[in-house]
Length: 117
Image 1 (cartoon, rainbow, N blue to C red):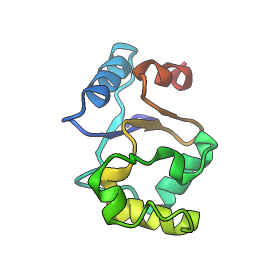
Image 2 (cartoon, rainbow, N blue to C red; image 1 turned 45 degrees about the vertical axis):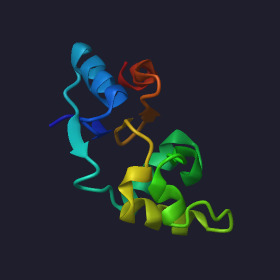
Image 3 (cartoon, one colour; image 1 turned 90 degrees about the vertical axis):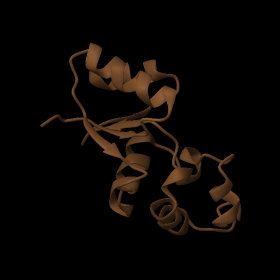
Image 4 (cartoon, rainbow, N blue to C red; image 1 turned 90 degrees about the horizontal axis):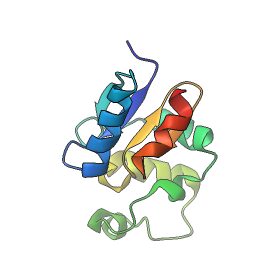
């Protein structure tokens, strides 16, 4: 079992490129098809902590679900934002590669090279 996980959407070209780049560098990550199996609140908390960002920083603001879910309300707490990310996983930026100790958003895919070396 790999130390690395990838929040992956096979329909996303950046996600496919990032997975391919990991594999080319000898990393076979645990693939989490997050639209089918959304990450838990604890996993999202872990990821944002490792990234050193707020939950809002890894939202896809152009997705219809962003507005439909109320995520455009700037008064929501981080806890409320994370709860909505679990409920509406399509709003989570992709791909995100993470382990126990590090995380990176694969935009561009090369960003993940820093955490696998």
